Length: 170
Image (cartoon, rainbow, N blue to C red; front, side, top):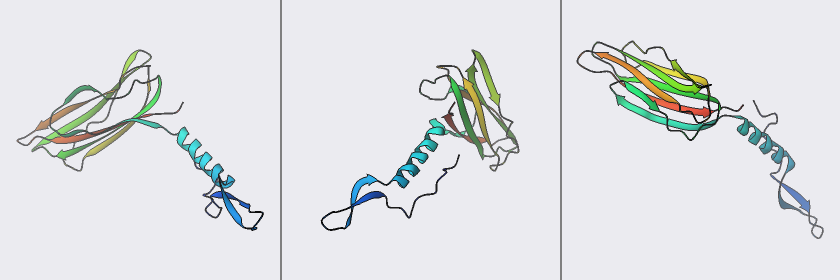
């Protein structure tokens, strides 16, 4: 959703009034209507956007093993829609081959749900994956992540994982 009005750059920021004794315009300290409308629209736009609840940058760095089911540190969630975004990248290739899979978990209607991304293969440090999953959570549920890991050869594959959770407006 874009703002409907352009920035009123040529309008004064505050209202002015004519001084009856000097005839000069003096600022009143009250925001001008054009700017008030612009800021009001900007506030409405921000309020309509998602609220980031948790950003777990470097949730994992230089990891060289699978991660069991781990709860994402969040405040108590209300029932509703959320977007969970992950970014995983191979930071060190294995000697021979490797595979990494990220899985998210949550509860919807008392049913435990999961979303598993495609395995990251190719065994190079340019391999990465970003997931963005919209989920519907029950009240007071937790959102979890885990990884499946495979690596072969003398040098073990390493990876990093970043996670963000946003509450979506409903």
